[in-house]
Length: 63
Ligand SMILES: [Zn+2]
Image (cartoon, rainbow, N blue to C red; front, side, top):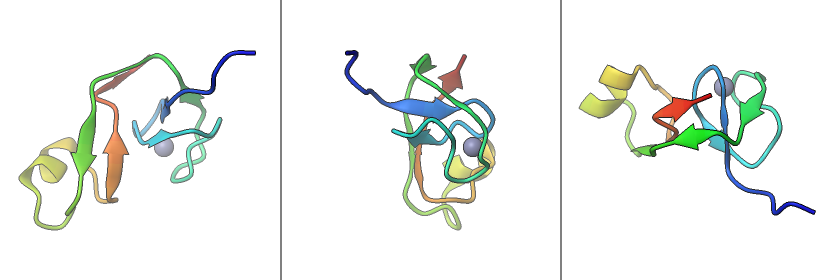
């Protein structure tokens, strides 16, 4: 049995262990690259550029 790794949403890139994104309910993928951590979405320039308004971890690229 394969070890359950990190996955990321194919739509919003949110990182989770689940098969579906807890935010937008889209499918997740294990084929992820990079990591973006948003701690303070309201005041973070990175969050604005990445258009993330929910605190959490995101993949930079999901295939
Ligand atoms: Zn999502």
